[in-house]
Image (cartoon, rainbow, N blue to C red; front, side):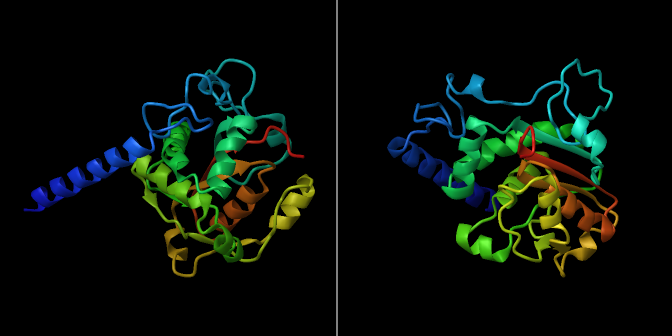
Length: 253
């Protein structure tokens, strides 16, 4: 009986998706060109996406010149600025196409971007996976959450955890104060602004103890947000922290 019910539900969902596609055929994530499936890129936009392949910084994911021989390397920024996390990766460099996808997700309810973004992040996160890893997003302050209605980092971490079949805790951390935007702040200003901005959720703190954490956010610039969130995790008993973002800004402004 359960199998029959599941089959009926799956058939109903497939019919609903087919009906929606008939009225709203899937379009490229970056333009209005029709594509074969939701969350795809058209042949024109695909080669323009600044995906990060090959050798990259093991701490922040920034692409580096040279061949990848499997040995961990770091960019100049990460050599001079100690990172509290173990490893970091990013899917692409922040540019026009990446900005278009992220702004659509962040401000224009383009949740159709989430599933493909989750697949991209899963591929880039693969080298960092360790047993007993817990996936969690960088949290929004409740005032910003009310304005946006969802946390873009949380929907990304949900998709990533699903792709990797890892345990997920969307409210592992909370933001203790409204930090405002990081735009226009220099490196030092960004780190000062994020100091002590996070805490474990009172009912989730025990899930940090002894766990390897994979923190998820949409963009990494100077790394100040990831650093503050990582410090919070480690201070409350996490065994280690790794981080991943959709986009990496090449140089902090």
